Length: 245
Image (cartoon, rainbow, N blue to C red; front, top):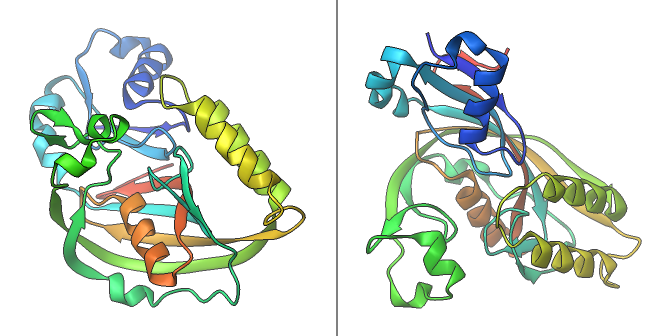
C-alpha cells in the first residue's frame, strides 16, 4: 500500500522521502520512490512507493490529479508562479473571471520554460536560466482538464500578500534565484501602483490528467484576461483514489 505524504512548501520530493524515513524508521532500509513530483512552491499529496511497489511505479504515474490553487491576477512571472522573476504587471480593473469551461477537455499544453522536460539532452529550466530559449522549440503534450471550478474571488490587502509571498520564498532551499526574486517582489510591493491597494485573488479546484502543469494553465488564464496571472499557492489534494487524510 503506497504511503500518502503531505509534502511541505519548499520541500523537494527527495527531502520528503528523507522525512518519511525519519518518521517511520522501520522503512529506513527499504527502497523508495515517489509517483508524480511536485514543484518546490507546491504542497500536498505525494504518493510514496516502498519496497516491491517501486517496481510498479508506472501503474501509479497515470493516475488523475486534483488540486486547489490560488491565483494572483495582474502579475506574470517567468516561472508562472511566485518563485519567478516578474516580467509583466498590470492594474486589475473591472475584473471578470474568464469562461473556465473553455479550458475543460483535451488540448496541447506547452511545457513551462522552468520545468525539467529535456530538450536536446538538457532540462528546459537550464535553457531558460541561460537565456537561450530562442534557440529551441519548447515541446508540448496532450493534457486533459477534467473539471475546473471557481471557489472564490476576493480582494486582499497588498501587505497581506507581501507577507505571504515573503514567508513562502523563505522556505525554499537550493539555488532558485531566491535573492533576486525577493528583490523584484519587494520592488513590486513598494511601487506606487500597489501601495495601499488591494490585489485580486481567485481560488480554483481542478481535476486533470497526469502531466498537467497547473502553472501552465494559470498562465493561459492570465492571457485570457489580458491582466496576466501567477500561481500564489498550489496544493495537491488527490491522486487517483488516494486522498490526504
